[in-house]
Length: 331
Ligand code: G3H
Ligand code: 13P
Ligand code: ZN
Image (tube, rainbow, N blue to C red):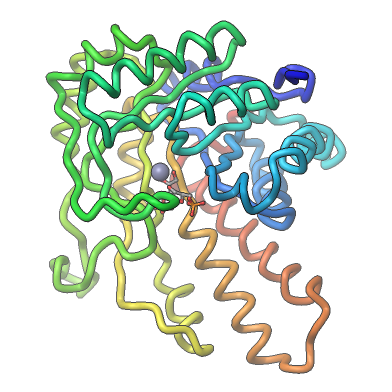
């Protein structure tokens, strides 16, 4: 039997995006796969009074089990009230790749889905996205489409090279599909290995600066579809302190540079109203767990290493909401 997100106390993204575009901030879209990640996201968003999009990839669904995830999301709406502040929560499918997967999520309590047809031809992308939109809108669920390809890893799909979104296509795509928001490609990429030091230039203080995002494309898109909600994937900043901690305590991460926070802040002030962050959370948790294992080799209670990892994750998300996305105090 199908379960509507409304029964779980969730909301779709429509009203959140309208306010975010008008207010010049972005809603955080944080991925979760387990209890600790969900706790950290919700605690951070309650403490900063931020709306939130809880994102689940198809890999996360396989890892955590769809039934458990749905019940965790139901628990989430009760948990935030218990924490003392009722923030709006969207449960979103990240990078849905088939109509069947999107339908299954809509039938199982998701309030928003992404259909990522960006690897298909333009016309195939339109046909697939339109089909999902028709089903989703019949259930009051919002849909995110994508035009342009990001480099990096999404589940089992690895795109070696990115293709920037063509502004000339966006108006037609939005009109013909009926999507509620559009993910675009302007130079961000998935994963922790976004830019190598060799791809960067140094500023006056010796800080490595990656190639500039294509804000010109974003501006052109905004001109063509004014006020339409734009989504930025691949928006982790790859905090150097977490990479250093991981490597200090036995890790082997490559030197890597993420998306500077000022650039994300600038994007959030524009039509970008949803910013996707996953890798930074993975780095923070891994850094904390490696540190605990190195400093307390006798520890074997998962709560003793997952607990501090959860706390660090919470601080990371609070920082993002307050200083990067501008979503604090918007719930
Ligand atoms: O864009 C991809 C997200 O970071 C989700 O990653 O597919 O490994 O769960 P995942
Ligand atoms: P990052 O890998 O940069 O965190 O991007 C996550 C993302 O786009 C999820 O859809
Ligand atoms: Zn993504």
